[in-house]
Length: 148
Image 1 (cartoon, one colour):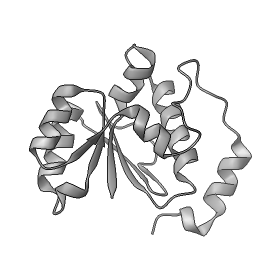
Image 2: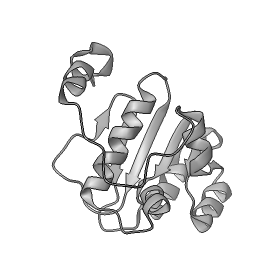
Image 3: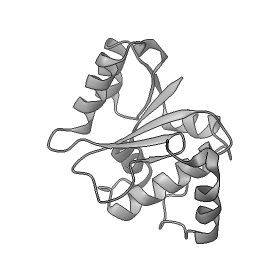
């Protein structure tokens, strides 16, 4: 079952501010950490153009919407999916949730997603946590985490 995550909405839900690059990086790190022990597939959507970095880490794919709203890209991807009913959209945006359900997807509140994927609560809304570089080196040295 693939999860689609409305990334900027999830950050805004936690911080009540417009997401910055550091917020996005912290969310990606948190998701990678939580998904590492699962076989879950997650597509994380952000508004705007992509930065000059990788767009996939293990079971996590990252997509940027370019010049259109990420909400529209998410709904378009659900419409294109062969099995839209298997997609679960994680968002606190009621309108996007309605559009996703109309397209055949299920929806999930952010809190329920965080409960499902470990440690039982959302990441803190404070400053991004520090990154353990050696942990990332070990992660990328593991053949299971490499793209083919």
